[in-house]
Image (cartoon, rainbow, N blue to C red; front, side, top):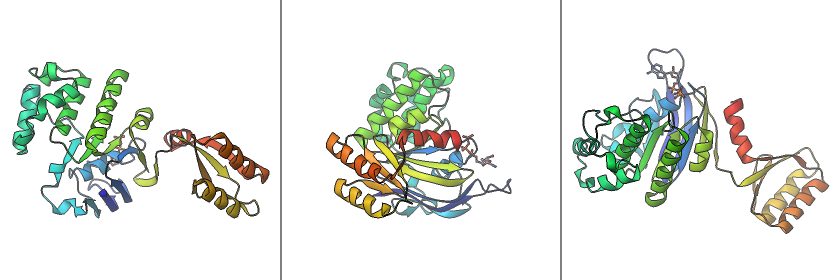
Length: 294
Ligand SMILES: Nc1ncnc2c1ncn2[C@@H]1O[C@H](COP(=O)(O)OP(=O)(O)OP(=O)(O)O)[C@@H](O)[C@H]1O
């Protein structure tokens, strides 16, 4: 089921003559954990703010389960949002969660408080005020607030920034655990490609406000780029793809790393006998190249 559908989203802030986002289209399915990647200033935060209704699109429509989010006042009830810190430094951790539930009229989730605080490792700090918390503790409190009412959809803007490797690991584990048990859909922006790779099953890559590409996680695939100039390339590739149920993406054949020896040798033999192989690379390299080359 489509949880989120972005249709032709553009955003131009009043102060600017340029568009921060232009003609963005994508969708997020139930259970997807989508990595939103792009360089500084590419429009990631703007896109997340539009989803969280903190900003309005200049044109285009954003839908949550088929409902236009701009036309529904209660839609954010279903969302867990971690964009900017929303806790009160002078209330204790426990009071912050209680207060959050009260102002959002979600007191029925009060029994979640202990579980969530244990999950984010703050149960022992429940009576402390976050005013003197470490950065990582503040991040985990923000996460607890975004999880407490069991959202269907989570929006996380750069949740790993400022965390040390242990803090990053912990946050990833919490999100993995949450998504495995609750099947919550998420979109997470980050510069930290390695962490996203552990977490996401899909990626959306934006560059200067435009959606450059989107793709499913292909960690467990080798990609063979093919020379389509070779005579009968189309037929040979189509026959291999059908025989072994492989995906062909434009001029690229995707080989699961789990293929057995017999199949692997047969495929490579057929391709190499016609000199069809132009390049073999890993999907991980491809993802990294989006970050480094843009
Ligand atoms: N409130 C605003 N008013 C005017 N311009 C803005 C506003 N917020 C963002 N922009 C501009 O929109 C563009 C995209 O910014 P945005 O913060 O969405 O990018 P980003 O990819 O999240 O960047 P970063 O990784 O640095 O956070 C930038 O040119 C930025 O200056």
